[in-house]
Image (cartoon, rainbow, N blue to C red; front, side):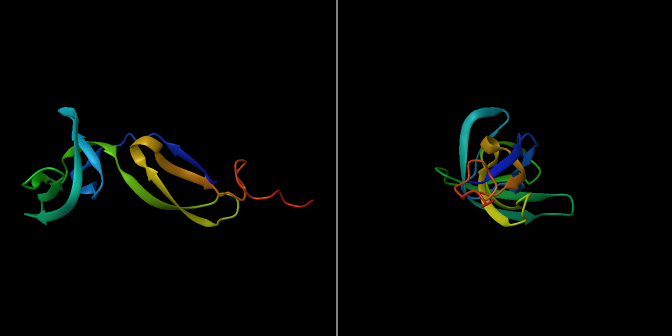
Amino acid sequence: MSTVVSVSFTRPVHARELRPGDIFAFPEAPTTALTVVETEETPLSAELTLATLTLMGCQEPLNLPSATQVRVMRMVRTVTLDCLLCGKAEEIELNLPKDGEPLSLVCADHSPEGDAAPAAA
């Protein structure tokens, strides 16, 4: 098993960053979880782009300025990181609010919890 070093996910998230499967709430209603089914962006002018979010259980899509800040509860992303020791690239899936933003990775070949056999002396 690989070891990932991460930092707390504290940066603001804008509506334009949401993807299907993400769960978020508005800062004004932090316990009302909304699940994104589909997203679309519509540029209205050089200064304004709308994020159109289709939400689970809602008949009509929600249109927000794409810079609207939301509080994410689930935001799963797949990232590729290179092992710090051997440089081998590995894809990992993280729920950013829970697991944090990844900084570095040590692959299973070098991780103390890894399944790899120790190198011969």
